[in-house]
Every structure is written in structure tokens, then in C-alpha cells.
Image (cartoon, rainbow, N blue to C red):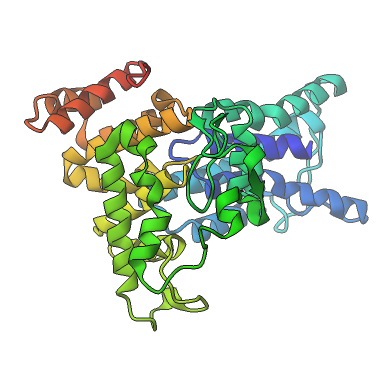
Amino acid sequence: MALAHAGLGWAIGTAAPGSDRRLRIWCAAAALLPEIDVLATLAGGRPILHNMFAGLLCIGAAAFFLRDYPARAWASAVLLVGLSFGIHLALDALFSGAELRLTWPLSGRSGHFKPVLGPTSVTVLALVLAALPWALAFWKQVTPLEIVSGRLDRLFLNLFLAKNRDCRVCGKACNNRCSTCRQPVCLRHARIGRGFRVTCETCRSGTAPKAVPAGVEDYVARQLSWLRSKEAIRLDAEFASFLHRKLTEGLRRLDDLPRSHAVWQGSDQKPTLQKLVDLSRTLLKEAPDDDASRWVLFADRILTNSPDAEFSVIESAILRDFGALRWMVSAARWRYVFSGIDPVVEMRAPLESLGRTVGPIEPFLETLKGDLNPGTKEAAERCLELLKGKNPFKV
């Protein structure tokens, strides 16, 4: 039943609006935690984790380690972690007849429950729950392989997703990118290295050096070169320019920091996208109104083709300037074309979240359709189509 519990916990975290990797892992871990009692039982002891106090400790730990989430997202995440733990106890009571001491250590009283299903039915149910995360992968574009590595998860999913790019070497259809130059490359002409990084032949041969030069401009020119490629410009030149501008400004901001700043500690003290992301998350904790950091995080998720675009990070920026809605819509189109992610599904949660602040979302979008800015007007029209279940980006 261990895989069944973990599978159900992962499914709870995956199906949640605004789900991200940490939430999914926490829900799966909370659902699996009481299974440690199996080891205690084998050692001749009694179960000590099938109780409410273990659940409260698990919830408290989640509340602490997820404290950097926005308030509403944090409350929702903590609730889902507690739900994952509680469902484990409920399943054990209903289907396995396990011994539960819900009030241990305050009381040693235990309860045994009669299973409501026979052994065969329980086995079938366990198999269904264990397979649930893989079934959800077709909806959420993420699998439990993400626990090991996000890059491994993307490689696995790309085996099944549409090959909508052309390999830079042979021109054949592919859907992977080189981690260094961001150019499309098929697995025949790529190497999967440490950390499941995909590297094309050109970068692997050393003609595109990985070391960051002293000047940030050289790094920008190389690392963000894909945003200047024909492929990106052909789809949405304005959006590609916007992402390039936000990441370039962020890298310059990072480079201007004194090398005594904490973000440089233990590093080569050269600006990189990863350091920029770390800095942006830190700055956002200190100043939630720092929209520059929000756009950096958003642009990085789009550039790196992350399974989760984290649209929630730019929600407050959109609320301060409704014209920014166009960039969320552009990102949804971008991800649909390059990764095959269904925008109807992906956009539902962020639009509903906006509606909780501005009021009923459809009347709000109808009002934006009258905006004088053509980009804002078009974005509102696309959002209305998405809310009605229509994909406006299909050719």
C-alpha cells in the first residue's frame, strides 16, 4: 500500500491550483510518512505515527518550510499536506484494518477497523492509486520523476509530447533543447550528462564555452541567445524581447551587487541565471512589491521551459497594471506551441485566482476588452475564450 499512499498524496499536490514541485513532494511525503510504522512493527514495536500528533508535527513542519509562499497559497499548501496525512489514516482504517492509536502518546488505546473491501478489491484499488500520478501526467505535464530531477521529468515527458521543433544539426523533429545554448536538438545529436543536462554537439565540443566571462554582456548574449532566435521571434517577437529585457536587466542588477553580498558566497562571483533567480526570490521576500524580481522569476520559468510556469508570481504585478495580463497570455501561447501544454487547463487556476481579487472574472475581462491598448484588449479576448474551454492558439 505504500505506493498507493504516495501516489494519492502526489495526486493531491498535483491537482491543486498553483501546484509546484515543493508542494507535490510535501503532499507525497505526508501521505507516505505513517508507513514508517511498518519498520517499527517489523522490529517488534508498536505503530507511533498513525496518530493525530504525528499529523500535527507534519503540518507544522510543512508550515515552516513552505513559509515563503504567499499567504493564501501557504494556507492552501498546509491544508493539502494535512489532508494527505489524514487520508492515509482513513484508507488504513477502511481498507487494511490497521491498528490506529489516534491519541498516542496521551493514550495507549488503540482501535482496529474491519476492512470494507476484500483483499482482491484492495489490491486493485492500491494499483489504481499507485498509477494515478502517471495518469495525471497527461493533464499536468509532470510526473513523480520530478522528485529526482526536474530535467529528468522533462526528458521523460518529451518522449510522449509532440515534437514541434527542428533539430539544429539534422533538421529532424525534436522537442528537447540544449541546456547551454537553448537551441533545439534531437537526442541523436545530444548528450545527456550530469544532472540530466542535455548538451548539443557544438556546446560539448567547446566551441560555445560554458565559463561565464568577466563581463555580464557576453553572458547575456550567449545565455539568452535563444530569445533572439528566428524560432522565438517568429512566434512572438514582442514577448521574446520582453523576456530578454527583463532577464538582461536582472543580470545587470545582479552584477552591480557588491561581491560581499550573500548571493556571491561560495561561488565564482560571476553573474548567472541561477544566482539571479536566488537573488530575486530573496528580494521578493524582503519587498513583495518588487515587480522587477517577479518578472525575472516569470521569465526564467518560461525560458527554461519549466513544467510549472508559476503564474501566481506575477499576479500582484498584473493587479497593479492590468496591461501586464498580455504577458501571461503570451506565455500560455508560448508554452502551448513549444511544449504542447493545454492553455485551457493551465490558465484556469491563475484566472480564477485573479477573479478572487477583482471580482467575477468574466465581467472584468469584458470591461478590459474596451481598453485603448490593443495588447490588453487582445489578451482579455483570449482569456474569455480560454474560460469558455476554447484554445485560441490552435492553428
